[in-house]
Length: 152
Image (cartoon, rainbow, N blue to C red; front, side, top):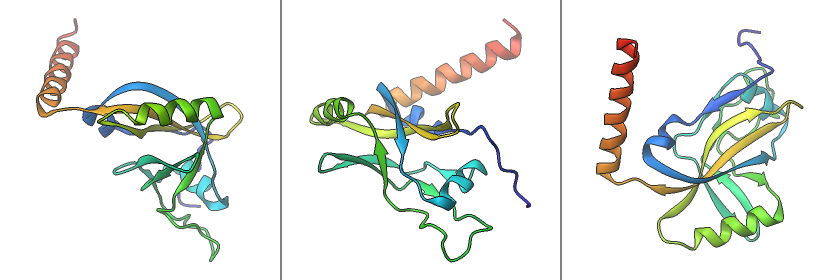
C-alpha cells in the first residue's frame, strides 16, 4: 500500500482559529462508514468550508471532505456527505440554545482518535472575527515568531 495508515490521528483546522473566536469546545463522535475511517487514518481530510447545523434535534457536519479510499471498490463513500455528530442530549440542547444568539456558529476545529481508536471531532461554538481582529492575530503570531527566533 502506498499511503501509510496511522493508528493515531490528529488533524487540525488551522484556518478556524484565524477566522473565529472559540467560546466553547466539545468533543463529538462521528457516524462514519467503512472506507471513511481508512481515509481519515491516511490523513485525507479537508476542513476548508466545514460547518455544523441542526436538523431536528440532531447535529450534522456539512462540507467536511474525506477523500475516497484509494483501495476501495464500488462501496466507497461520498466524500462530501453530511455526517451525524454524536453528543449527549444535554450538550445538544445547550448548543442549540446558544445558536439562537446572533453571529454564533458551530465549526469543526480538530479531528483525532481517542485511546480506544475511535474518531472524534472537536467542535467549537464560535463567533466570527472582524478584519481588525484578524490583523491583531497576525501581529501576535509575528511577534511570537520573532521572540522564538531570538531565543527569549
